[in-house]
Length: 186
Image (cartoon, rainbow, N blue to C red; front, side, top):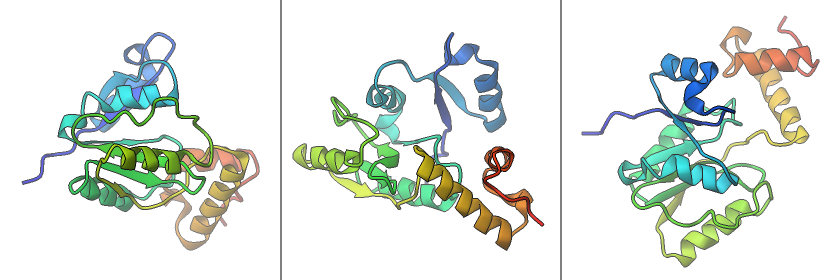
């Protein structure tokens, strides 16, 4: 029998995540545990967020994937049942999610984040360490202006084929509308 999933929000705020009204409200809204992700490089913060939960299995998801379908998360979680690490690639050569089950592997040290070879280097490190891994489904994240344009095009397509009130990221769509990047639904 599968264990119920636990949602954890790993966040940073000037006086700590626990003192942020925004993050406390978000955690309450989703019935999530709120933890501070610490400081340092992206890799150090990811490790800090994953490590306390990795023994039972944890999937870390970036906040820059506003249109990510839940089905893709289910596929990555399922893959984590078969492999110690799951890496879900993003279209830019990085990854939008990383899952770990068991001891946290040292795969983030010295990584130069935001480059198109992050996925490749991470997989190479996993292979060198002989850690069994699986790839999750690919999706896009939003890091650069070209990604914003892809997101806007994706949302414009969704507006054409469904009710615009049912977009996966209504607040993001509202901002894109304000910027003139997303036409109002007719």
